[in-house]
Amino acid sequence: MAVPRKKMSRSRIGMRRSGHQEQTVTWVEDKKSGELRRPHHIDLKTGLYKGRQVLTVKTEG
Image (cartoon, rainbow, N blue to C red; front, side, top):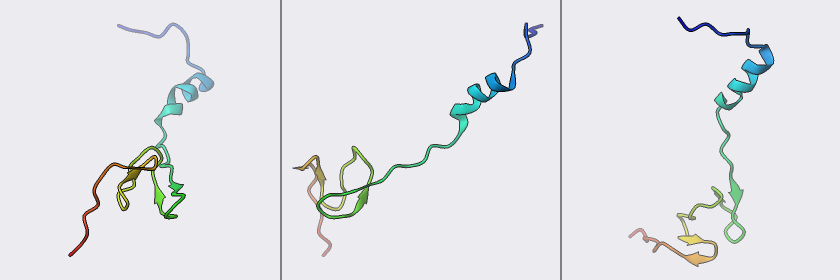
């Protein structure tokens, strides 16, 4: 039967659990349009990534 050799301290337990919390989602404001977008992601409204046209934007109609 597996038995721990020493009692785990509250500090050690807290350090192990420190990665369990939910991460907050980061948003940045686009320099040209002012829209909020995720960093290092394509802007879906304009289709731009790092100033280059990556996607063709579909127009409604």
